[in-house]
Image (cartoon, rainbow, N blue to C red; front, side, top):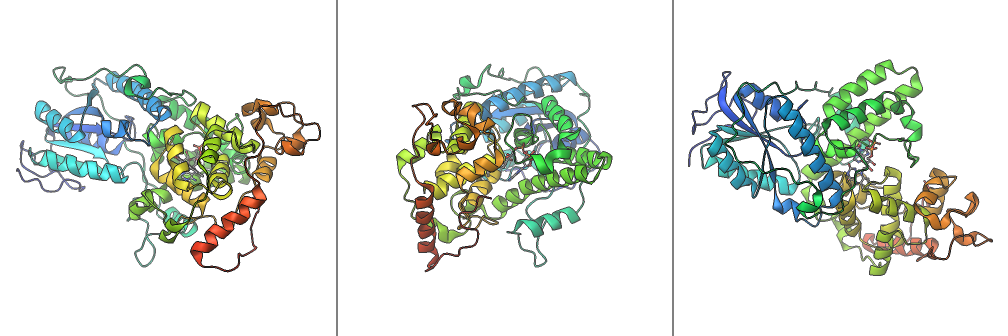
Length: 509
Ligand SMILES: Cc1cc2nc3c(=O)[nH]c(=O)nc-3n(C[C@H](O)[C@H](O)[C@H](O)COP(=O)(O)OP(=O)(O)OC[C@H]3O[C@@H](n4cnc5c(N)ncnc54)[C@H](O)[C@@H]3O)c2cc1C
């Protein structure tokens, strides 16, 4: 096995194999392996490959282990495919050619490095447990050929060991984490990939991109959010040109006019990078007319910090991927019935806001943040179904499904996570609906059975004396008040508590 030193680090490339001693001059060929960074602008590893090598060979590898995972679904595969199409044409416009292959990444990359004569494979780091293990396999397969593997920080501003408490530990509470995060400043975006210096090697085999996600085994594609780098930048600019100024007040309303940015799938697949988003946000804030507008910018930045917070929770505490952050809650005795879970998935619980949100998710691959919290709390605390079943269902359906953010959101809602809602805070699905969808516009759109129910009763049709919900709308499958008490008992049993604190219980926050 050829010795490689220094891969994974940030210094000059070292190693033997194909004459790889780079301390400022260019090596001949470097492969850039695209994963969650499907763009040519502000891409750390791609820029480093461009700076390091005469020729960059861009590759995307369909990994069957991912495509066949029970956590993957059509909305995300369709978004990925569309983003790859856009990436392919952006690369072509600059004289590069995207090589697409299918197989085990360690075999695909080893073969491609050999065929292209590459000295190294560059990639941006991915922090999920599967990705870490896969990258270790790839690095060792490449090392056996004398090819270096270098990974770079890119999808987050600060990695898991870069924002730490005074004693060097990882933060488990968001507010002090966000304070420490903000104190560090923000790195500038990286330069765009330059035009190819040499013509691409057409002899390198490449598969055409499939026409639809169905060809990849995922028929349920949705096109709600336009994919690709150009669409992502357009969405970012449109949001920052005005809507961000109303974000502090408008972000909790699930409406079609875009109270939030809908950038999550772009951040998930790297069609927009967080550095670019933050740089443009700083410009928007500087131009914002008054304190209200600036406040919107600040609140939006906080959401991007939540994204980083959950990324570092997953990286520092990988056990959250398979169990509760607070391990004692793995002993919770979830009493929920399978038919309740099925009704929740189908949007047939009899609670209008829950049903509307789930039907929206099923039809579009998307759900507003407030509604994610409502339905997650309803599943865990009203239906008493384990958060892990909901987490998986979300991963299968969401276009932005992301292990760290999804797991963080579910554990927050269930009360089992780091900075979680306390177990005794249980959203009331009726008052949540009345507060955030007061005229029932969102509910009526997704639950047409309630079209004729007056505003006053649209979130509690069982109280409507006119019984105007059409016959097909189900009766409530559980009683919120009864289930709330059962939930509190379930948590108390694990906590060994005799009485439940009253504060916040049953609140409709
Ligand atoms: C149960 C549950 C599951 C969730 N699953 C996911 C998921 O799989 N993928 C995902 O990206 N987000 C998830 N979230 C977080 C949040 O709901 C979405 O990021 C948000 O709705 C995306 O809409 P947006 O892009 O318009 O957000 P904006 O409000 O415009 O926020 C900007 C960006 O900040 C990030 N962000 C915002 N809120 C959060 C948050 N609470 N946690 C982490 N990042 C956040 C996202 O990247 C988002 O695009 C989940 C939340 C809950 C409660």
